[in-house]
Length: 468
Ligand code: HEM
Image 1 (cartoon, helix red, strand yellow):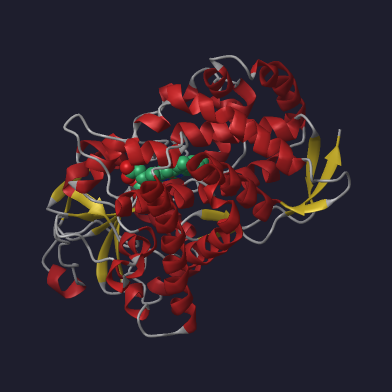
Image 2 (cartoon, rainbow, N blue to C red; image 1 turned 90 degrees about the horizontal axis):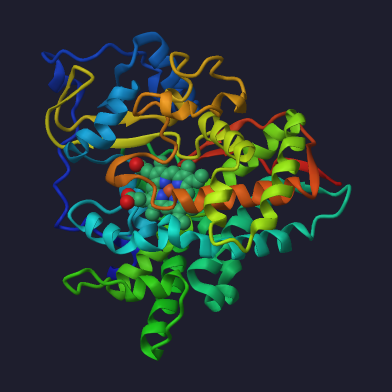
């Protein structure tokens, strides 16, 4: 059993071998894009990674180089380079620093998998996330949202961060497992929290070395990963052994078959399940917490949302409900704008598998390449007043006027978010359900960010509930 636990999951042999990291001394004769070279670089990077990347772009341009832990990193920030890394040259990259560590929690699920296993699984898992299927999740999303917010009393102060985390967790867990998880909800949520917290600082190479030294901080990471693995495996095995067939997402994963009859193994279903729980709640919870923070500061938007909620939520029984919701103008514009300013996935680390050209720059094999939603989404060439919250910019098909790669909160190419439509639907529902019942008022200054693997607001973000 021990060798199967995700905390010890080795890198599958089918993956491409990871190229050796490029050390500064090997690169003396190589011409690199300009970049910061201060001896305090690692410290500056650690203290505020999004700020560091943005400043590097401002000072050195769209392609910049720097060294962390003695290894070469390239920041690739223009839309053209983002498109190359994620789409047109994606096969020349594998997922980069941080993902091996994530694999310790998620095993070989979709987020951490590499080719050729990744695409095989992706094909099997695509259909339950197709827009035609996700409408069927809307009722669960509405019911759980209503149940959750009905506990909030007029005048009460709630911690929006943990509240959104609990709500989005309940939604994804219910859609994945139905009732099977109810006994373990708290345990899984606690373990997820520890795991997410410790998949932090993901861009610094070498953190893995500490995992097996027995330090309490890292030991907790291991036991949280093993706990998650234990719950998911138990539920999957029970279903298989007892022949339980359910039409929740896990049921779909257990039954999914390729045209040539291939299915996911129990272990693979278990890893995919953990991947969907982790990637399917923290991201959405963070961005919603930012949404309500912006709404609290810009109260005029509540009125528009109330009107939209009146018009749309009553169409709940329509077969086209998902499409109606996804094209709702105000909640779409507000959500797009917050995904631009506070993208939950704010950086996507990659590793060059071979020498590759990005935006005309020669990038050597083995380089760490960072593309960053946070940096590119704040490029004044594409977004005027880039630090301001201006939802109206998204009207009149603004997104279609942007070059490819300028706005990519869900990534792109074959590694694009599997749950993008799911997240968009869920966020619209939560925003409109809340707007139709209350106003939320921040009780502190606008939250600052605590960027980890995701772009989180720091602290619990207390908000006062004013029922309407
Ligand atoms: C606002 C919410 C969300 C955002 C902004 C988001 C963003 C992203 C991004 C940027 C990636 C690509 C990462 C990379 O290229 O390195 C990704 C991958 C993924 N996301 Fe999401 N995500 C969200 C919600 C969800 C939800 C709700 C689910 C599932 C229920 C989900 C499941 C996944 C999966 C499985 C992958 C890996 C896909 C693959 O590599 O084939 N995400 N997400």
